Length: 431
Image (cartoon, rainbow, N blue to C red):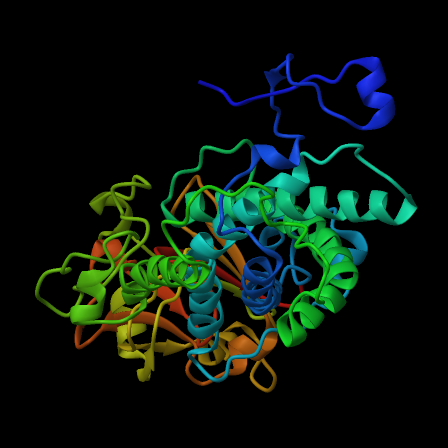
């Protein structure tokens, strides 16, 4: 049965006394509705400090992930063309170290997953304040409530869309890139405002606790008997985060750790034997690439000042071959270890196209006829890097159909979607 409270009569309201004869339902707006003995300012402050560090790292690595696509290079790379001033920080994404995107995006996704129990615990700890009435007691209080709305709404939206993207469940309307990008900036506005308003109080509570004689604004006035201490609750949250770490982080590592990554794609199962037995995102069958598309009739078209050149796979294999040990890292956070790729340097193909001295950017087109990133642009610094290849082989064997046969792009430190598979055309020039 719901808990009930007395309704004061008019004389009682004037005097502040509660009558004994009348009762009514308590609502979440009543402070006494919340009776957990765990809630308290210090408990919330500890969770807040953890989120401050974790969410800051999430935002920074998220911005880096967006920059790694080189969205200001060409419209095909940019999934948020109306970003305006929000793209102020964009820079030419480097090619070294070659594991850079594997690190930044792996951290972004892993930290996001690990923070889920902390975020839920933090929201639970402050939920009484979300129902507090009146909604705003002053201008400062109104700003605090507004920042809380942006913070809570933005955080839930970002975590939900991020987790769905990791699981390859695109249930949200529109592009994940667009929604997640703008949602991050809405979240940041609330995050910065909330930290500015609450950080002094959190630091004071963590250092000295609540001053003697002052009530704890988050503690229940009439708590239920304790079944778990606040330290125990923090330990429970930490154990949940540790469990998520163990069952997700391994998608970026080979061996036993990957087999433990049961909660994410590209983890939990072995890829089978052979040189091509490593993780793949889109398969040839999924994008309707057939043997007829990649067979003897396939030709690579290279365009530039020298005109339009066409090469068979045999002719490409007859060119000077180079090797590079590079990983594949995807926006969903999974990655492979370094694989040994072999093929023709992009800079050598640029020289054949008419750029012998300083290779420019290149526009890459795939045999894939539909879907995101079937076309992509690479910067001149990526083309010039000697490890950037039109790969024909991997780990000493021809590419498998799922890994991009007859030829694919492989570039150090680039997001997986820019390592175009089933390449059909390379157009060198300023983009």
